[in-house]
Amino acid sequence: MVYHQRAREVLTIEMEALRQARERLGPEIDEAVELIYSLPGKLVVTGVGKSGLVGSKMAATFASTGTPSFFIHPTEALHGDLGMIQPGDGVLAISYSGESEELVKILPHVKRFEIPLIGMGAKADSTLGRYSDIFISIAVPREACPLQAAPTASTTLTMALGDALAVCLMEKRGFKREDFASFHPGGSLGKRLFVKVKDLMRTTDLPIIDEETPLKEAIVVMSAGKLGNVLIVGKDGRLKGILSDGDLRRALMSETFDLKRPAIDFATTNPKVIEDENMLASEALRRIEEHKIQLLIVTKDGKVEGVLHIHDLVEAGIQ
Image 1 (cartoon, helix red, strand yellow):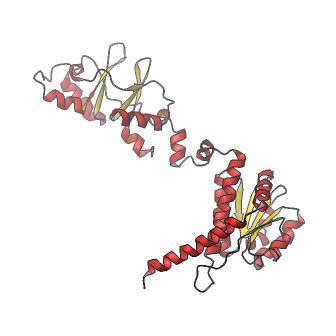
Image 2 (spheres, rainbow, N blue to C red):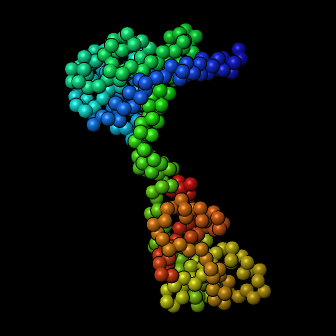
Image 3 (tube, rainbow, N blue to C red):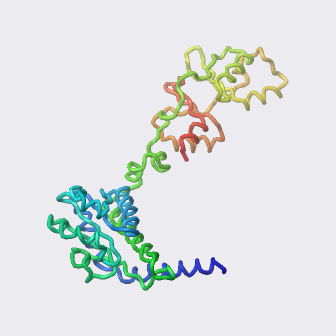
C-alpha cells in the first residue's frame, strides 16, 4: 500500500472540514470574543477524552496570549474541583456529541452559579447546545478515520477554532511581542527582548595587563584568561587596546617580532566597545556578528567594566 496517498486523503478531509467551517462562521465568534474579553475572572475550559486533550491545549494557548485560562476535567469538577470556578469566570465546554455524560452532569451546576457558558459541539439542539449562551459549531462532514470512530477532522477543527479565538482576543487586547515575551521569559523571543548585556557579561578575573607589559607576559595572561584575548589599559586605567590570538599570529609573521616588546605594539588599538551595559544582548550579538569579532568590551568613562564573549551569548540561547 502506498501510504502517502492515504495520508493525502486524510489531509484533504481535514482541509475540507476547515474550509466548510470557515464559510459558516458568523456572529457567534464575535459574541464569544466579546464575552471572554469582558470576563472579570478566568476562562475555564473543559471537555472529555480527545476533546479534553484539545481543550487543555486551548487553555494553554489562551493563557500564554493574554487571556487568563485553565483546564478542568469534568470528572474532577464533579468531585470537588467545581470550586475552582468562581463568579466572574466563564466556561468553554467542548463535546462533539454535546451529550458526554461527565460534561453534561456539570452543566446545571455551572448555570446555577450564573457562569456564562460557551459550547463547542456538532449539534446546537444537544444538551450542551441548549445550556450554552453561545454555541460554536464544530460539525464536520466526516472524520478522516476510515471507521468514522476516532475524532480526527473534528479535533483538528476544534483546535483551529481555539486558535482563532485566541488570535482574535490577542487583537482585542492589543497583545504585543513584548507581552508574549513576558509570558515566555525562557523562550527565544523573551531572551531577545529582555536579556541585557549586564546579565551575561564577565566582570571578574578578566585578562587585563598594562600598556608596558611585554608580549611574553601577555601570552601567559591570555592563556590563563581563556578568552583568546588580553585587554590592555593605560596607567589611568583606561582601555588602550586589545591583543587577540589573531593579533598574536600576525605578530609572529612580523619582522619586528620580539617577545620583549610591549604587547601594545602588536595590539588592536581601536577595539569595539559599548558603554551601555543595559543594551539588549541580542543587539550586542548583532554587533559582534557585524564586526566579525568574538569579544565585545563594556566600558564606562573609558575604563573596562566587563567583557561579553560570543560563546556566552550562544550558551544563553541569544539569537
